[in-house]
Figure 1 (cartoon, rainbow over the protein chains, first blue to last red):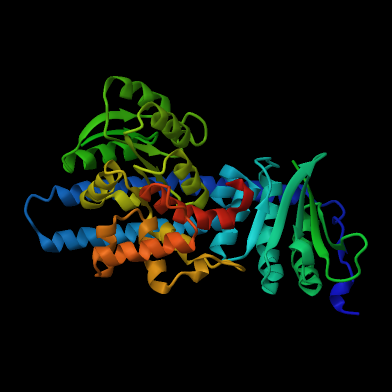
Figure 2 (figure 1 turned 90 degrees about the vertical axis):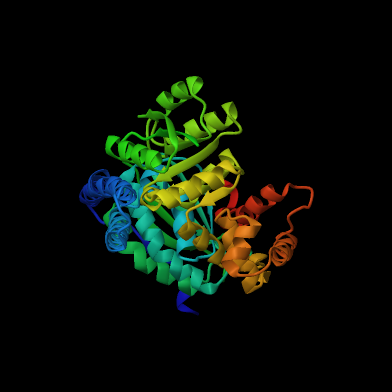
Length: 215
Length: 221
């Protein structure tokens, strides 16, 4: 029997949830502050720099080059702020929800992922935890090379994510590894994750189910 | 060129107005949100409207206003600006229009030359996409049965430049090859991506990018 043929289940950590929710709300707040403050100021500054460059009274190559260098530095600073902001709380997750955000990050990470899910929203903290968990586990389950389906839904105050691998299911060993990798963070948020087999199958038709409470 | 601007952040709107005037364009409207822009355009026509995506009304008022403007003024170009280059914004913009639209990062149009080039191309009906985003789109390989994987390296380079909204002549200039050769590559891309010949050339250019996105994004398209 392979290690992967043993289903894995992780239950919520007792008393968990509130601290994690506060943590994710703080991350979202910090990302918003970065965007609404420094980033927008720098964007506006870049345009004014463009005006200044155009209004140079005489053709002065040295000053033009200097302004170009300052502009490139501005662009680089904005890029770094974006990266930092995305690590705190992905703007696309806040603006458009989990399904869109996972679709975008899968493209960025070059993962063969198909996302199924509508525009339903589950609250910033639950979506933050789910996003982080999926970014951890998707590269693992995608190692098998086949397309992975991510089905996002929710009912009765819970966010559910189901990962499956088409007709053959997820690779069981990789599914177990993925569940192990994200279990601690999901449990700390009051959620659960498990590797299960579809009914009436013995091997190879594994899927992962993640459940998280919504705010 | 007559240009209308809608941006809720005053300091950026003001700077953009100055940059447009420095480039020799006529700024016919400076609006603080989408509704203000719609009202201004009723009196003052524009060749291109520049819209911040994240401005009122709503969280993404630039997109909703852009869709309304495309319905009301089909010939007016639309340039959407954002602080982020995101795939889902691009898809929504291409849903608003497959001709005469653009999507650029705010700091990337901050020179007279780039801004004017972007506006001219949009006014000419081209689709102008932030180059880094266009590059990301066409370099992403798919796992299985990949139509894009059947493209040659040269065809992928041509597709990347198409995704940036460049004309055949523009692509020829970039790759230092003849326009006829570019047309041959593009015919090969359309063929491999199974884009029907009864579509207009411009539509097929956009569909070449969309076919990739559709495969990646599944039913959300």
